[in-house]
Image (cartoon, helix red, strand yellow):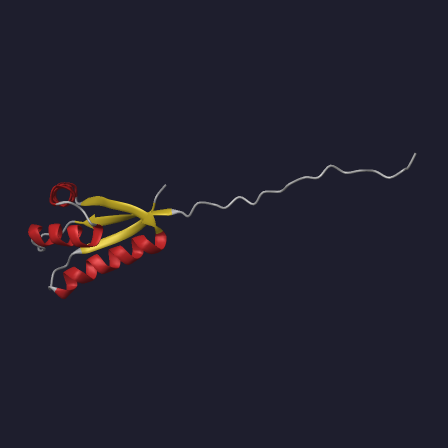
Length: 101
């Protein structure tokens, strides 16, 4: 008999982590017209008229509203583009991002 040891083969799996998600948040202000906010939400976040109106009203009543959740890069890009759309028209429209818990 041989004295060699045989080791069982062990397969190692590399687990890929899901990317962390970030919330895009609309911050209410008293100067940006409601219709303009709805237009930006429809254009940048591809919402229906009804969805955009509900998000705008929620932000108006509560001060802030989560618009959508994306990966970090997408969330930051959309928040920046939506905020810049307001600036281009002279409005203080503001979108921010924060990590989702």
